[in-house]
Image (cartoon, rainbow, N blue to C red):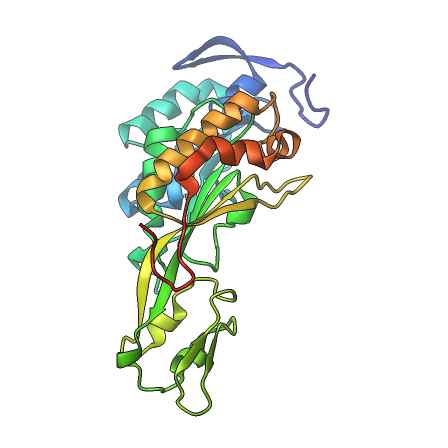
Length: 320
């Protein structure tokens, strides 16, 4: 049954796109990145833009293609960093896909599978960035995009605790963090680190000016490291805070934090095992967060094993 707002009351159309020849349901088209609009015969074509990044040359070529096939000549920037060409007639599907392929641009997909990852700018140019979010998004897109799952599975990467990519609202989110260490001989007691710390995790000793560090209040943003003029604050380690089970929409759910300092080299393995757990325990059309609520977080953590271990001694020294 189709939405009563859609002017075209039929639920099937004739298409001729790779992997979709003949009569295809609207839902099948949406899974392939072709989303039915309310206007008869017209669709939105969603493009695959991992991390929201495109070269200027490709952006110009996409604009030309949109001008050619969009009946209104418009592009929409989606909330998940995709470009969407609006008002495309389904009779033009084969032609628009061919033109997009000619410039190396792929069509995205919807439905129950791993979606295109989103990411902030990361450490490439953002002073707050603590990890290569764009590189990680590309890795996920290359390795995991389109992997079947019980429902949609969204991943994202934030470069720092400002969390622009909203890891708390994703099925699996990664946020860059840095563990600060104070090197006493280099400290002049200038108190700049106290002023830089917005969390109250650093308080200057009233007599010496040297920092008193409360690690429990630290959110591992690295502001103290960037602010210190004598490099008395240094990175002990970099890593990723990992959150699983979040979603927005009609029934939002906040993700569960399952690791604070995941080494970057483990990210691919964590994604792969999380998908494996989800495919084993998730019901059809059930997001991973709901599966975690139903089955229990312990099941997930037991399945992940040592992958999510981020042990550190209270002295601030890494364990073996």
